[in-house]
Structures are given as structure tokens and as C-alpha cells.
Image 1 (tube, rainbow over the protein chains, first blue to last red):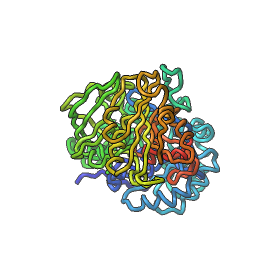
Image 2: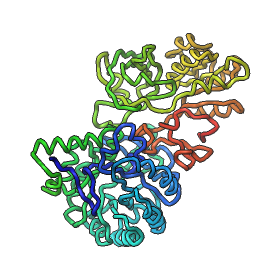
Image 3: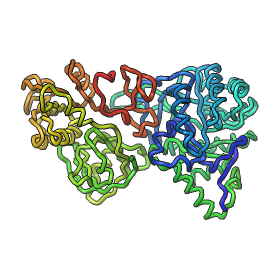
Image 4: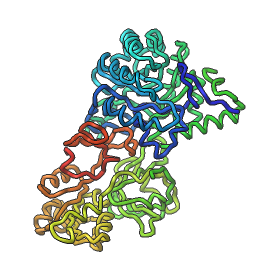
Length: 301
Length: 263
């Protein structure tokens, strides 16, 4: 019997495949394509204490082998999320990781506290790495001390296991991983998008209204694999790896680099079945290589 | 039910400079209606996102769809090379489309008179709409706007509607835009459906005044299914889904009542 179950901070996942926050809504839209029961977890779109309208359009553009986005964390706020999205997710036998965003420490804490009483929430993922909002978010994720402090603050206000989602837009990902760990994070996830820019040369204009955006997609995968390797070797807490994952082979690569679980992000847009295809691909790989327990390959290189 | 499927090209032809007429055999045709669109994927892995293209026609046997599109970049340039028998990946059917029943019920006297306004590459979705409205017993008046006399699809509108034309250079029909043609011909109507460039849609929103206008919007899209929140339009009221003043063009639209959106 093949074992695909993994454990992160005491939470067991039936398999290591999740999707990247912001690429899957709260699961509703993609439930038309995939059976959410198959997934290791659903990671929700970032949710704040109050509704956020997000950035002006154009918010997305295509780049070679990927895309840029500057959505600006549009979300309906925590109350709507708890009344509409959580009951929807409660119908499924999968883990629920709620991605939390904010502009100040108080914003994050308010959402974390509000979710503490929600049984349907298994873990929190703290977005301190969005490159597309002016205040908060990435400011917390690019400074060692800030990251450690906000991790401590959030940990002090919730009993749920906390994943800190890290940005690749730093000099040393290992240092940031260690800062999250020393702040008490139960796990880290990386990478969020890489800040990029595209210029429409015919119109002499930025392709995105926000000028800069976060790059995602297969083109960033080697950067993500490298960072997952460096981060996972710098800390003892588990790592959730992501960045351009499209197939089971990609997922295996991230796990060999040191990830305990993986997320499919932009590739959901290209292949709405990418998450379940990844699960099948992992199982095929295990069969092909006679692997009984997926945990055997974590960090094996 | 939305799905990503493999369609088979039945035929393709160039019907005007840079404008292609592509017919694809696909199960998606079963549920396809006027105003909806499909995402078309390139084979080139450097251009990953689906290209949203509106549905110009659905075959009578509901086995194929017709897409009329303009070559606007790398993706559509690749599509223009598709030939009979080629496979093409599609995501669909996407978007809300036009509500035929609602359009039939907006009237001062029976039957209701629906004015269709199409500009440039906004013309193709109007053809399927003309067809569905005409089948529903609605009186259809079509006014299509082109740059010059190199028109496309124009004669097909005459089967379903009273058809007028406007050209920017005056080489055919009214010289000017579609609204100039509406005024010049003294066209009377109960409501408007329109698709075309943003300045045209803005002018139509103002022109409609008290009458209802339903406009089909376009925006840079990623997922096409309402998850990524990339393609939004500002709304006057708080949107029921987003709980902010934004609606998703790919799922809440692409057809909106003009008075509800801030364009």
C-alpha cells in the first residue's frame, strides 16, 4: 500500500498537493473541474479583516512561460469569508488553510483571532509577501526583525498552526526562513511571486496599471526549487514548496529539494485539472520507483 | 458544466484583413449561447494563458462552434494557422451571455425591438445574438460599424435582422460610428445590446439614457473562471460576490447592464 500522507505541524494531509493562495478562490470556482476531496488541502485566497477592493486594471498580463499579476489582494473580508466560504469548504474532506493578509500587525491579529474559533480551519498561512500592496504585506516579509516579530504576534493570538509565506524578493531566503522559525512559525511556504515588469512597446505604457506585478508560472520554477532547497536546509520546520508547478514530476522535484508539501499556482489557469494531475503524477512516480512512502523522498538530494 | 476539452478544427478562412473565421467541433457547443466565450490555448508553451474569444455561432446540431477573431498578437497569430483536422484545446463555456428571455420582455409593444450595435471585432458575438433573438420572435435591428468597406459577417445579419452599416471613412453606409447610423436612420428600439471598443460602449451608455443597454466587456484575463480576480470592472453598487465595487468580467459578465458598471 502506497503512502502519500504527509504531516505538517501535527496536521495530516492525505497527499502533499495543495493549490497556491489566490489561484483557486476558496475552491468554489474550481470545484466544477476537480473533486476537492482529492486534494491534500485547499489554500484560500488571502482574506483581510475588512473587504479590500484591490488594484486598478489591467491586473494581469502574460510573460514568457508565465504571467504577472497585481490583483492587490481583493477580498470580501473575514465576515463574508466565514459565512459563505467556510461552510462551502466544510462539505469537503480536505484540509483548509486560510491565507491571511493585512496592512498592519493589528489587521493580521484580528483575522487570526476571528478564525481561532472556526473548527473548519486547520491552519493559517500568513501572507507577508505580496508584492502588490503598498503598506503591510511585503514590508513585513523583507525585514528579518519585522518578520520575526509579526510571527510572534500572530502566534500569541491563535492556537491554529501558522505557516509564514515567504517572498523570494530578498537577498537571503535562508535568513528569512530562520527569522520565521525563531518567531515561532510552525511551517513556511515559498515562493510567493517574483516582482517583475512588462512594458507594452506599441503603446509605450506599462502592461499593468500597478506598473510592477508578481511573476508566476513555469519560468520561475528553477528559482523556486533553489530557494526551497536553501530554506529547508536552514530550518527544522516543514516547508511547503511552490513556484511554477505543473506536473507530478515538478512536485517530486520540490519535495526532493526539501518540501514536505507542494502547491499548484498559476498552472491551474492553464490546466484546471493540474492539482489532481499532480497527485496522479506523484503516484505514478512512486509506482515507477517502488517508493512506498512519499516521505522517503523529502530532501533526499 | 465547464471543462477543458480538445476540439477539432472543421475549417478556417480569412474573411477580412487580419480577421479569421474558425469552426471547431467540440462538446462545448452543447451549452454555448450568445455572449459567452471560450478560452483558446496555444501550442506554444511560452504563451500559456487561454485567449478569451467570443462565440460567433453555434451550429444547428450543437456539435460545433464558430469563432471569428482578429489576429492581435502571438497567440491569435498561431490560431490563424490552424487547419482542418487540427486539434485545439479549449476552456469553456465561459461567461454569462445574453439573457434572451429578459431581452424579449423589455418592450413598449409586442414584439420587443432589440437594437444590436457591434463595432469592429465586437461584431462577431452579435451574430449569434441576432440569431437567438430572431428565433425567440424578437424584432432585431443590427447596426454594425467598420473602419472601411472591408466588412465581414455583414450579409449574414440580414437573415435575422434589419441591417444597417456605418464606416469611419464613409465608404459604405453612414459615415461615422454606429450611433451616427442609428440617428441618421431614425431607428426606434426598446433596448440595446452592444459589443465593441470602450469609447463606443461609453457613448452607448450615455445614448441609451432611460432605456436599458446590455454591453459586453473585455479585459485582460487569466483564469477565465472567476478565481483569480484579474479581469474586474468597477460597479456602482457593491457586487454580491466580491462584496466590493468590483465585478468579475469572466463570470459575472462579460455581459453587463450598462448602468451597473463604471466604464
